[in-house]
Image 1 (tube, rainbow, N blue to C red):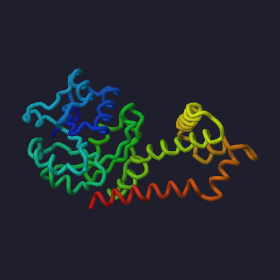
Image 2 (cartoon, one colour; image 1 turned 90 degrees about the vertical axis):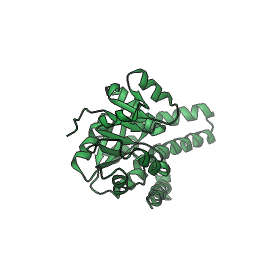
Image 3 (cartoon, rainbow, N blue to C red; image 1 turned 180 degrees about the vertical axis):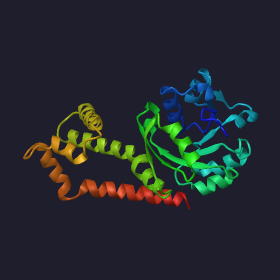
Image 4 (spheres, one colour; image 1 turned 45 degrees about the vertical axis):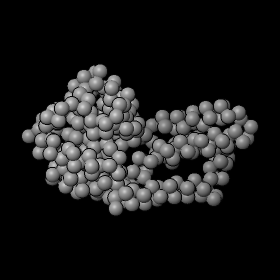
Length: 265
C-alpha cells in the first residue's frame, strides 16, 4: 500500500495547475514531495523547483508517486495518458481537475487505477478556494481530500454527474462575480463617479460581502444591509421586479452546465 506522504505528481502547470502548486507551497506542503511534469517553462514550476520540487525528472522517478494530479486541457488528456499510463505504481490514484472528462474514461486510460475528480477554483492559490470532490473509490476520495483540504473548502458529491453542476456554479462562478463587479462599477460610473473610484468601490463591496460570516444565512446577510425603506432595499426591488439578476445567473449556470456535458461527450 502506498504511504499517504508519498510523492505527488502534477501533470500540467497551466493556470489551474499553477494555482494548485502555489496553494500547496503556501500551506506547508513539502516541495520535496512534488514532481511537476510541464512541457514548457512555467514561473510557478521553476519557483517550486528552487525549493526542492522535481521538474520533469527521469521517468523512473514517477513510480514513487502515490497520487497523480491531472491538470491538462481536456482536449489533450488522452495523448498525455498514452505517454504516462504505465509510468506509475499500480496503486497510484489519479486525481483529475479537468472539466467534462468522466472517471471511467480516465481509469480506463490509466490501466484501471482509481480516480477522483476534483473541481477547484483558482482561489486554492492562497488556500482560500472551494473544491467539489467525487470518487467512487474510498481511497481515491481520501487522497483527493489530503491534497485539497488544506487549500479549499471541500464539498463531497455522491454522484459524478453533479461535478458538472459544481463546475458551472463554483468552477465558473468567480468569473460571474467579476462580471457582476464590472457591471456594478460601470453603473456607478454612469451615475457620475470617475472610472477608478467606481471600480474601487465596486471591488470593495464584493470584498466586504465575501468577508461575511459564512455561518450566517444569505437571507440574513441581505437583511442586515437592506434596511426597510432604505437605498439598498430600493435597489434590490429593482433587481427583483424584472428578476434580472436571478434570470441572468440561472442562464449562466445552465449554459456552463450544458457546455460541461458537451465536453463529456
